[in-house]
Length: 155
Image (cartoon, rainbow, N blue to C red):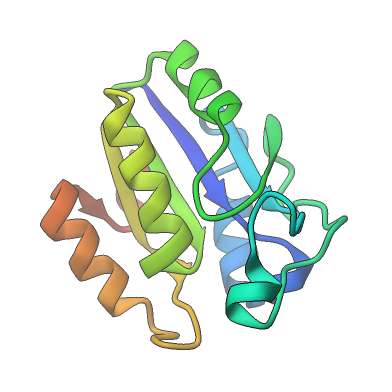
């Protein structure tokens, strides 16, 4: 099966656990990959004004994906989606930080672009609201259906 991997916001600002980094590194090189990195720009996304906090402005991805795309806000950039569409995968595996927000937003963007988003449930971390990520996995299953474990991504 032709697959691509989208890694969402695994960057220093969000303090990803080492097990997440190690798990994602085990997938690098097995399929084409892209990573998003959230950079704060208050003129584009009002994190400080509305939420009272903001992600960093210059983080780099902690995962050496084939391509890294900067984003502002929850959704991956149009360039990220275009890159993944060019790869023409049968499914796009999605993993990373904040299962119920940024990861879920990536799923909607992929779905709306005609791609098959597939969550790698044991390679995601939830937000402070739900660090386990269980809520995000439930939402993903409800909206997109396709949820797998890392072991299934390697086959």
